Image (cartoon, rainbow, N blue to C red; front, top):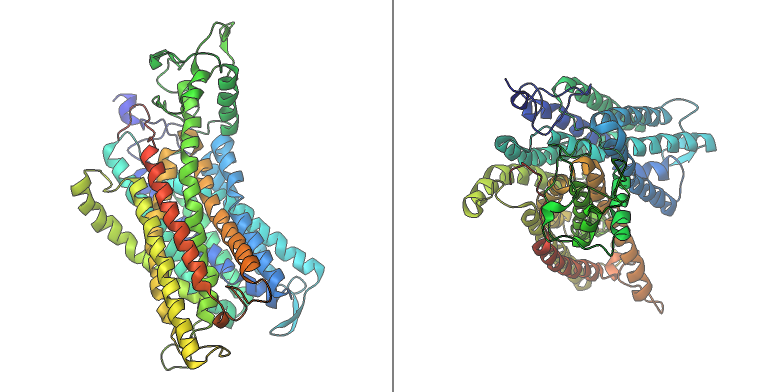
Length: 570
């Protein structure tokens, strides 16, 4: 048997660095361990984060504004630290060891968090339910634990989806089809974990104890680590390719050094290694593309480039290295269109909750009240509903019309999700218009809960869940597929930063809108009592921005050139 028949064609290795046996490793055999790890990790993350602002306020005795700011700062950190984990994975450790190392940090953080809520002397002393007096040391222990969790999740978030996709060989047509399906089920597992966290664990924290409320997520994270290590012998691993930022800088520097050099009409004359593989570890050669041609100058050979038989990478770069930079530049406009979508998505934990507070939160005629934030469960249920529908029905049906192996291209899928998100904002605005009409008609201005059921909010949550399945899962697959082989974790981390920036954009819009509309003693669009407000204007503002965003996305998508690795299948 020839080596090319025995080992994966893209040069993947096992966890010890030996060539991976294609018959015994990867594909769906390895994925249950990765998906199980992600489900438990997300259960742990959402289990401790969903109710975190209440712990700040009631256990750490913080004012509402301080608690909210601390919660937002921590959440933002969780979407910035992936850049650290991604860099280490792509440059030095590889995805397997990055996930392994940061998972252990994650468990330590979760364990310390649970101890800070249970162990005498570490947990805050409370006289009544809402009257606690934590010491500086007790608060410090809690924050150390919290930011250990943020660091731990930073090594997992950008790597685990890419690592699952690594288990499928791009040069095998059957395996490449399965890769697209993997992203659907991977996102499905995230929402299973979120569903359990937002229902069961929030109830435990409110009705049993914070010790158990943080202890169960810690146990879930320990189970996630066991899941991951259990599949070790089945995994395929991409070799780390060295610092991706250095390689990108080399192309930029070499291009400007040769800004006066002409690029040959015959692109086969551009510099590339003669070997079958590229000179970047863990990366296949990439075909030359015609756009962004200025950077092709970095691959033009001149007499001064070959000094004593060695090549200075700051003066001469391979075509594959140039195409790495081009791929990242092409991703940035697509990345930017995800920010407004993330701003729309963030309303589920902001204005949707405030809107729900003013509605009837009772379930039927019973005395049981549903917390307004718990309605996000319908977003999760929507995702759980739509993922199998997309994978089993939409893909086969659209495949017959488009001829594309995945039914829709990644950009088509993302565009549909961006379009659906417009309707989520329009529906939320219509509901608020009707709610305010009832407020005026029956003079409910000072009523805390008007007699309009909160379940009228379900359609807007359901629509955002549907948009998630198209846009966010499409982004996961797109940023993996279009990223250079040796920069996939970094590009996955880049995709995650849209969520942080979307939250910051939403916060900025609220600040601007409040500053403009609340002048001259006016209450403005978003007052403390929303019965006097106009948050439907804010929802419509986001809808208009989303329409413009879709238009920009369509233009960018038309311009976009898909990456093509040498020897791979389209």
